[in-house]
Image 1 (spheres, rainbow, N blue to C red):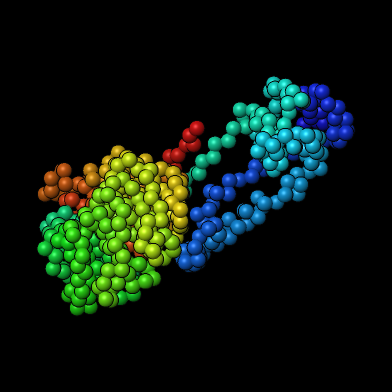
Image 2 (image 1 turned 60 degrees about the horizontal axis):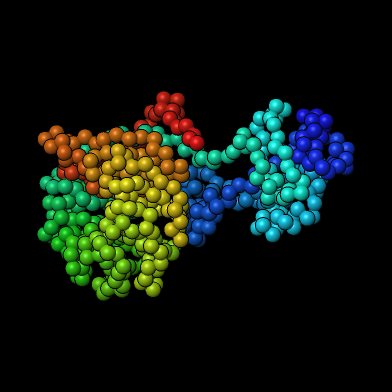
Length: 481
């Protein structure tokens, strides 16, 4: 673009002010300045607690990749470079033409001088574009930034990461009732399922062979968790009981009494010897594993507490409830830290990302992603076929699974919320077609296998299609305005 044309544009913008000092400068081209990126998009990885940062570093070290924190740190350093270092001399002189009075008026109106550095990179030539006339007397730095062509409009969207499709690998039969809960061994050798037939079954993860059946509950088993530090399995049931099983001797060694109604969810603190249970009595109870004494009774929900999860960083306890709220708890004080009221219907599903400091909740209206520690809302996921979401699971690769009460299955890209696969599960032969609901799910420790518990009394194992490529299964994504 010639210097004469630049001069013409400048004279249209500033018709009442001579700018010979600027026009005498020889222009070699239009300066291209980068917009300052919204660094808040990276807060979930920039502000990771130390425990999760170490976990993220270990996960990426296994894959032979550098951590996201390093890439983000370099990105932030690039973005914090002063305008004068990135721009050429001509651009600096153009900005200096704004008078001191204009800068003062911009400061009074709440617009800092840093706004002068916001220059949008033009993607199309402007030879035939009509520029608006500007009154020099009313000109300010704020108006200089706000006068922009429609061609400059920016709508940032995250391009989803390609993931291979998932398909059914194995169907396990053995339960005589709805399968309501599942958990995987920390060593990734076996997994346990709990059912409405009042039993707990231990399965070999590699072969799918049934190892042992545990009996002791007198009603449906709704929650399971295996301790990573002890040979213990904890179960919760509709019989108001919370049991601790010794997996070396396959018998109950402890019981925790206190719930006034059915217990629907159970989880272990990753670093402390604490057990958290929740259920129909609208409270979450924190127990000392060894003494069996209650540490806290977390009250505040107005209806059934459907899910509870624990993590090592604050907030250390997260609960979802049928009262359509999500609560983040201060474990030390035993009080509510934050209440999230974005959902309009009962919240039945909850999952925490294994490496990022984020989590997701599911309800009949939609699936929402949040960011710790304040519980800031990030974005929505489209639920599969507007079903009631019973379960959510996510792995380290950023694949989130959502299972509905009608058997619908959705696979999402965690970072963008894009649904890259959706289908309905098929009831096993001999079951009613209506018995296709999905009640619980989990990924194994490698994240390569998905286990679902369904209403047809079966347990299904899913895996990625290893033969799929980006050419055979292209990403069907288009940016939207």
